[in-house]
Image (cartoon, rainbow, N blue to C red):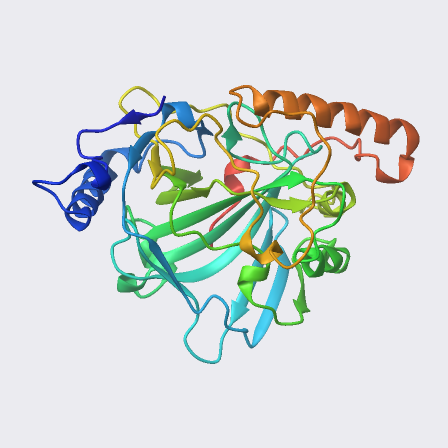
Length: 350
């Protein structure tokens, strides 16, 4: 069962001393009281719902994320793939929850691995997923991202996990198709403008939140991290397009992964606005709302997702399926080149 802090009171049960808004403000204060210390703890970490403290916060407010940008650019930096965009008017921003004011969209970038079993930077119940997307924001009060990077809470990272499905994801298809144009490092290409919510999805409640920092040499970037419980899909061939990208040494770019990091005793991982106090599955398999008008990509997998070992069983099934693919289809085989020795921490936020 998930833990509950003294400040994380269920509004439905509080009929005397607190209103729902008062509880939210108390929990917001709790989150920010941890910033001076926990924002400098290492990230990413292992996300496990059984270790998370349940709290209630105000819903997140997604502003202008459905607005079509004037231009969209995809860049192979030699370390990651960055998606940036420009708007003629006001761009997307995020407010609410535990956020201190408004946070402006900066860029989004991907993390992948040598195989479908080691792509994500965060681990889920100790296991890695095929692909991870980071959507970077900075606090408007700082004026620009460089000024915000050094201050706890100046930068916000939204985290989205991707899982493998048997059919391709049409929403990520424009990005995947453009990867062949930026195979070489320090190259970029323009994409036809699309709303950013085609690539990922908004959420107002039910997510994980924690403080942590990334390091790039002497630069330390303390950030607030929000991890969506709902996954995005893609198929095996879409995933393998990322493995064709080259780093600055002209070798296939695989991010050198960090060691497993679970929240140390006393460090907080929050499960925000949980639907139930008895959650046993860290991630949900419900589709994002954008798939509502199309048939959801459902694979026949004999996995009981309500069981605590669901992720472990799913990974085993994926391993078996990948082994079959590698045996019968050389065209989708994972490249066997040596992994780049550059540090995982060089995947930057700027």
